[in-house]
Length: 238
Image 1 (cartoon, rainbow, N blue to C red):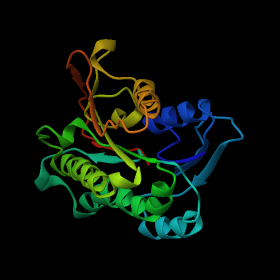
Image 2 (image 1 turned 180 degrees about the vertical axis):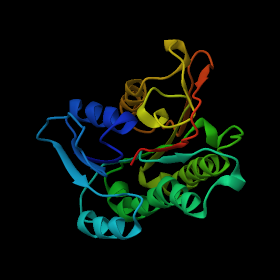
Image 3 (image 1 turned 135 degrees about the horizontal axis):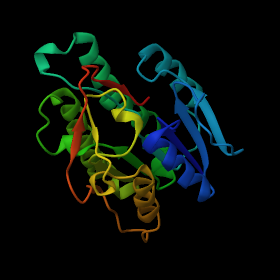
């Protein structure tokens, strides 16, 4: 069985890749580069692509459109956090393309084979798509849109056996925060580990056929953030 994972070189995507490899899936991993990725497995097949570049994505889609996959994981994402009036048009367009347009395109390309295989689409959304997201209005809007797309796509295709799952993590211990002006505290109760999200996917895959968990929110036990003094507020996970 094959799975395609975007943003598979680090963070949540990487941990999901490791989990699926342990479950004997062949993983088609997509990311801008894999220079810092330490996964060494013959079934971890890398595809370098700048997923924020529409031209690169269109070429990539042509190359992989005939792949027979059973799982699609849309994990790549980007965040710019600032008052909405301070966001550049370019940044807004990048957020929308990577967080929302790309998963819609990939779902379209692989929908037929995923239905044939009674497979899964896992969309890594965010708690920002459920709650208000001050200084992250565009980011939250894309995640809310992705979550709504997931539920609508499931309703549209559920008779085929396709499962579409929205996973809505809160603060997660990844490099998403390395260039943001806020980040998780040192208290392990204040953040989620990426491996825990991968474990949730494993649990969902082991449900009996006919039982579908279509939407799940994962939160740390306590909410606590630290703030940086600098103003660099971008992080890209593609």
